[in-house]
Length: 271
Length: 285
Image (cartoon, rainbow over all chains, first blue to last red; front, side, top):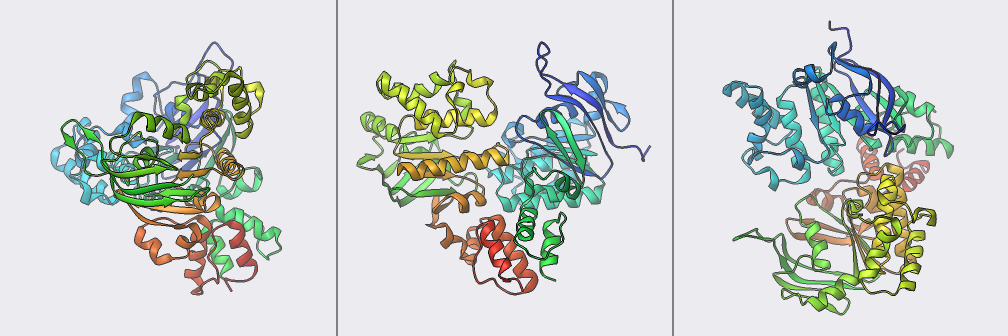
């Protein structure tokens, strides 16, 4: 069982208006292994958010199927499969329900009937992971955007899902908080063997992910490691470090001519 | 148009419970023709500061002046109307305010309300459409049939069609893809330069701050913690650490390289071009 992918998306298509021949997503397939992270990128209107809604069963594909852990996602299995996944949306204000941070993080656990002691420790643990433990008694509405985002993240972490989905969940953060959240996520990914899908516009987020899925107008353009994707698709705006590397090569600096992450570039420059 | 805040306090009154001052004794001066970025964490009072500028929020104490008009706690309706004509406000996700049947009607709504004549309105619609980089063939379309980036442009066109002297923008690039965002911000900068307007931009993105703005105003807990030139602020690492603000990408990479080599670059690099030039000159060696 463990060698099959955690998530299998098989040839799914979806359109919002079935009277028209405009597909928000057409014939998308990809697999995601346990402990693997994937960034989904694409311009506005490429179908990224539709994909997130399909993955969580908020929408159902017109054609094709989605399998989580070998089980097909449908009306019957949806409830059970959702226990294995957590999603954070763009605006955390839309998902707060409690009057204190810790109650809010506990909400998901309460719904799963977790015993109190276990719940207590999971909530504390999740809040510590996102550095929000000292704010546990605060009212979520009084937190800053970045802090809210962390609390929403803790709510998902406490559930210990096998798959975490982020739909532009970091757009409201300042660059510093964003990096620190992404670093936390990467740590959690390797420590707990969790799979992560992040839908994003931010090219500088990309280096935190194992692979990329590029969508354009509802179609899959390519899937691959950041280095492969940016090598093949020169039209795609790369992360800052790679842009700089290309610039330096064009200006005649002696640098290797392949994709480099930020740390690789810094290492090479400082040799 | 010059803007002055003179010891301004403001809060939101919700029933009998008053929130504590969301704007807590701010005094500042925004000179004519400047392009100023407002940064700070959510809840720092940035949006409240913007709302004070056109009287959507009235000061509980102190005065806000826009040119020769002054808003105080009494907020006379006549003055407010005049101020609102001067200050064009583009809220976050402005495309949510689109409502008319056609793009043309939507853009014309503002000028119509401010009493421009029919001929003037036609001219203003055409002009602002061009300024935001759209072509007239879009005019008869429904604004709801457009893409996200186009909607955003139409919404901004509707504001600039009212000919404001001061343009206030709350995260105008949020939620757009990188290319779309860059186009919108570059368009706003061109607009600023060609029309001698005063522009105020709220953003989280320090790359936008260094690329498009002259000055930066940092807010925290309802107060202005610093107000200076963009280059001045980012040249002072101690100040940045104290204020807890992020770095633009080029400068962040510069600091990483400096940390690695233990040698400090002769200049602070705010743009990709500057960093590239410094590296070509061998600043890291």
